[in-house]
Image 1 (cartoon, one colour):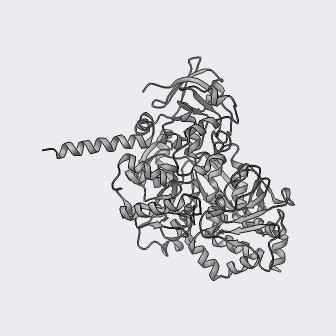
Image 2 (image 1 turned 180 degrees about the vertical axis):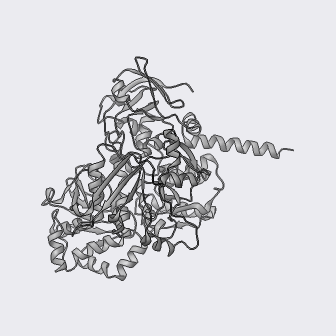
Image 3 (image 1 turned 90 degrees about the vertical axis):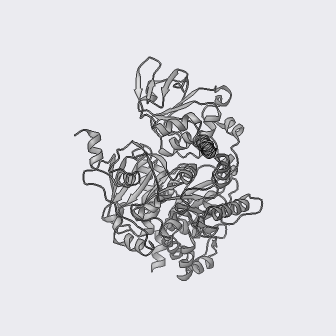
Length: 433
Length: 180
C-alpha cells in the first residue's frame, strides 16, 4: 500500500470530520477539499467590511441562515467616539432581514462560549470561524476551522476550501499540582513547541489520563491558546463529562463522537506530566516566552486583568475569588475581571464570586473581549500589565513601551494583591488554611 | 496567467507578521474600515529592511524561512500585496497566513528547501498552479499545487472579486433565461 493510500485508510479525528463534511469516506493530509460547515461563527469587528463586500457582490439572501452564528463580543458596549454603535445596528438589522435567528448581541459573551453553552459545538461538528482561539470548542469534540475574513465566503456559498491539516498528538498524564492551572500547561507547551514549528498547521489531538482529570473549563483554556504555536486547530475526544455537558444543551440536534483510527499518522507525538508543570509567566513580546513564575517575580505591575477566551470561564472566576477572598488589590494596581459569557456572569453571581471580587476592589466588566484587545483598560507609556489575555506583543493594550506579561488566573490574582508579579502558591496556602 | 517571475527579497525564520512585517498596533484602530493601503505600504517590512518601502517593485517575490509571518492579521497580507509583491515562497508558515493572503489575491507557496536555495536579489520563477519553483540555476523545487478553486481565487485577485464576477455572471444568466 502506498503512503498516500495508508494515510487515507487510517484517519485522524480531523480527517474524519472533514471527510464527513465533504461527502467523502476519507481525505488525505494536505489535500485541498471543499467542505460545507455545520455553522459559521462571526464577530462584529469585521462586519462593516463584510457588509461592503456583500453589497459589492450583490448578495440578496444567504443560502443557510440557520447555520450563521453572529456574535457581538469585541465591543460589548459601543463607547463614545467609536464606530461600534453603527456596527451593532447594521449587523442586527441584517440578521433580522436574512432570518438569522442565532444573533447574540452585546453582553452575551464570547463566540467561544456562545458556541459551547448554547449547544452549537457538539461532537463531530465542523465550525468555520474567524479566529484560531475558537479551537476551545474542541473540548466537546467539535472541530474549529479558522478562516478569518473568509467566514463571509462561507456564509455566501455555504462552503469553502480547506487544506486537510496534518495531526499531532499530545498525551497528558498526572494531575495539576497545587496552585497550577491549565493556562500554565499551555504556556509550557507553547514554550516547547513554537520555536521548532513542530505543531505548525496541525490539528492537535489531546488525550491521556491527565486530560480526563481536567475540568471542561481547563480543557478549553488549553485549546484556546494552542494557535500561538502555529497549530491550525485542536480537539479532544469527548469523555463522559463532556458528553453530559453536550446532552444538556443539544436540544435534539445531531452529533456523533469521532475517534481516530488506531493506525492514524501523527506528525508529532508528545507527552506531558501535569504534575511536573509549575506556575508560568509569559514574558513579552512573544506568546511562547514562558518562564517559571519565580524568574519574573517581583516586577512591579500597574494593571491586572482576568478574562478572555483563554481564561474567562467559571473555573477562572473561582480561582480569582479563592485568592482575593478577604484580601485587597494593591492600591497602585487596577484589576479588571471579565466573565466570558452571560452564563459565566450569572453563575459567578450565584456562587457569590462577584461579591468577593468587588469587595477586593476588582472592577467587573460586561461579558466579552473587553481588555484582551485593549478596547478597555488602555495602558500608558512604560506601564506593566499582567493578564490572562491572549497576546503580549508591543502595543497590544496601548502604549508601545508598555509591557504585557501573560499568566493564569492564580498568578494574575496573586500579583494584583501583591502589586508585583507573584507566585500564587504561598497566598493560596494561606487562603486554604 | 503565467507563473510569477521576479526579484527576491529574502527574510529569515520566525518573522513576526503583526509586529515585524507591519506594525499592527499603529493601525489597529482601522478595524472595519477600508484598508489604508498607503499606510500599509509605508510600513511594510520597514522594521526589518528600512529600504523596502522605497525600493520594492511590482512583481517582486518575498522568500521567507520557517514559520514565516506568524501572528498575522489580514493587514500583513494586504501590505505585501499593496507593495506589489506577486508571490510569497516560504519554508513553512501557519495555515492562516496562506488563507488570508490568497483571500486578498496574494499567493503563498510552502516550499521546503527554498530558503537555502535562493539569495536576496536573485530572480525566482514559481507557479502556484503547478507547484513548480524554478531556482536561478535552473534547478526545480516542488510545492503543493493549488487546487482549481485556489487558482481561480488567485487569478481573480481574491475571493471577493471572484464572487463578484460569479454573481454578476449568474445574474446575467438569470436575465437571459427570463427573456422572452
